[in-house]
Length: 340
Image (tube, rainbow, N blue to C red; front, top):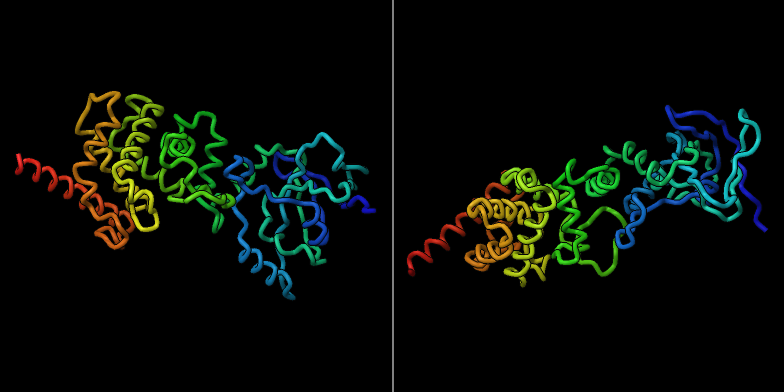
């Protein structure tokens, strides 16, 4: 029969938060802890997907003769059962964890600890006491905002979850998430948020890409300021529905087309701003407006990875892509005039 795990600690504060400090074998810390990986389909968790190479690199390093590491950071989440408790005196507390129970949420150590389940190396740890998952995510976000390899889309999702009024504070992020969550959107559940990979989803772009593209549209039209972010979200949705309708073949083959890659997404949002700005006062008819405008030129443009947008990147590449699309629109208009 397994016995409870007992970890001798010191009790104190890390700034405004109460913590336990201690030392324990890596195998023990691995056995009693878990990483709360973002499950995009279920909408649970908040951490990045596990990177095996990152973790293996740390395993190789930490077993060297001169290796060391900063304390592993955990959180003892509140629970309704007795899975963990702190007993003993305040000066000599003992963290007692029930047998076979994982109670330490890995706030900042999932890759350091990931492949150390079979090692007896003693490691330092710090555990927050009783942070809620929401508070824990705030701490994680502060620690990892500049972390190498941490998905910017995942950080954006954290900001959205922590925001009091996302529509007002970050309208571009509000609209990007609306595109991801709205069932009628061609981007529905198809943005990479930086969490665990979900089988069956054809990833087309990241949340950060869509957010930056939407910002380009808002900076040109100021639609969120004039009519509100909710209205702006509906207009942006109408545009992408029109794109997916007119260019349905290209949309169905995202790996062979650039309409869902960064360069295509950014450039198309600039074209959306052009179209909207050309026809003010068309309230309620935006989707038809976008369908008509795109039908006039988009079908004849080569969106493939071997087309004129091939190799374009960065802000300069986006400017060139927008110029190419505007030229295509202009030529299509001249054709219509010439045939009239």
